[in-house]
Each structure stands twice: as structure tokens, then as C-alpha cells.
Length: 295
Image (tube, rainbow, N blue to C red; front, side, top):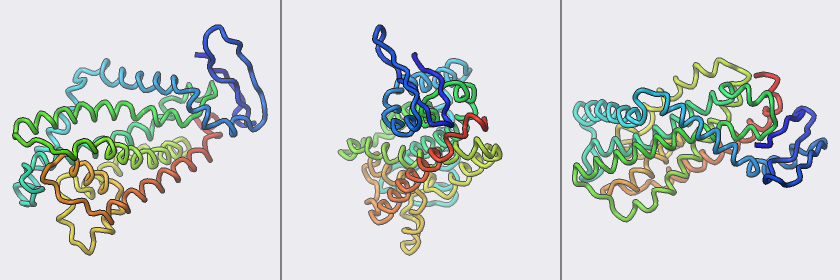
């Protein structure tokens, strides 16, 4: 693929991949890696696709359950949450939407967020051999790990539409805005995953912390219930959790009877997500040069 080794600590960089048969130029210049970092991300886009496809192949080709896991896991979780929150706690649904659909509409973004966080936080450690040998923007590794989560999300989304057909509950025009909600979810996930991936290289204890954070987040986010049950005086503070805005936006797009979006809370959730993304990129870039030495 034309990837060449460099001395990252000194700030050197090499020429990126060029078409077959074209002249290849090796450039060694102090500070070049820093100046061309973001353009290198685009130049190494094929590496992103290769890493993403490799992770998908490992996830499904070498698994007995395969794609069925993306169906079984949300179905079991939906059944438990429907029983606990819908039957025992008797929390209300959104309008006329069946309670299982309310829960599944919350499961969709939550599994996307949690999968990106779980897989991306350990992605640098899992690719230690690659990181220690060749130059490329390391940001590619945790971002490419999200491809598996996106594939799982597509499978679960197809399951959701099957459930809508079974309950004869069609979506309305708001479904066309679902891609916007997906982008919001990706922004909310990438910031924390970049910070955790960088910290996990230096402090390996974070591999124990991430599963706890994901489990804790499941119960403080409105996955098994509607965020409209939160008292009005606490709802803005509750929206400091970025997952709240993401889940509410998915339900608004997927459920025809969904409650109107609480715009102050949505704006706050998106703002927190953007701030976390900025902090994640800064943290990652500040520690990136030491990855090869620490790994």
C-alpha cells in the first residue's frame, strides 16, 4: 500500500501512497508530520477502509453467531426493559407507540454509542504492531474501529423496521431526518472514544473502567423509558448526558407519536458532544507521538 516508516518523535513524515507507476518521493523534514496531519488523514483513507473491513471480517466471519448477535442482544435487552419499566414500573410510552418499540428506538442509538466506545477504547492496543512500525495518522485506528458498530447498527435498524411492520406502526415524514440523528450519535461517541483510546495506551487500567462506564450509562440514559418522565426542573441538567439528546432525536425520527423534542436539552446535549469531540481530538493529538514508545 506504499506506507513507509518514519521517525515520528522527530516530527518526520514520508510521502503518502501514490498511483501505481507514478514517481514516489520520500520527504524527510522536521515538523512535516504536524503540518500535513489532516491532509494525511484523507491520503490514508484506504487504510481506514482496510482496518474497518478487517474488523468486520473478524467480528462476523470468525464468529459462530455472526450477524445473529446484532439481533439477539437488542431483543433480549428490549424484553427485559419492557418488563421492568413497562410492566412493573408502568412508565408511559410515547403516544400510541407500543412500549417495545419505544425501548428498541432507544436501544438503536445506545448500542451504537456503547459499541463504538467499547471497541474504540482498546483499538490502539489491539493494533500495537502496526503502530510501532509505520507512519500514518493514528486517529484512523479508533475511528476505523467504529465500522463494526455501524454494521451492527444497520442490522438492528432493519430489525426495528420488522418490528414496526409486526405492530403495524408505520413511521411518518420525520424518518428522513434519521441520518442527521446518526451524525449526532457519531459526534457524541467519537470524542469520548478518542480520549479513552489515548489514555488506555498509557494507563492500561482503563480497560476495566470502560465496561463499568458503559453499564452505568445504560441506566442513567433514557433507553428503557421516555425522557419526558424526568421532572421539568431537572430535565436540562439531565441533558448534560449527551446520550439523552441522541436517544430523543432517534425516537423523534422513528416514532410517529414521539413527544416533541425538548430543544433546550437537545441543544445542551449537542453542545456537550461537540466539546467532548474537541477535547478528544486535542487529547489524542497531544499524546499521539508517544504511542509507539508506550505500546
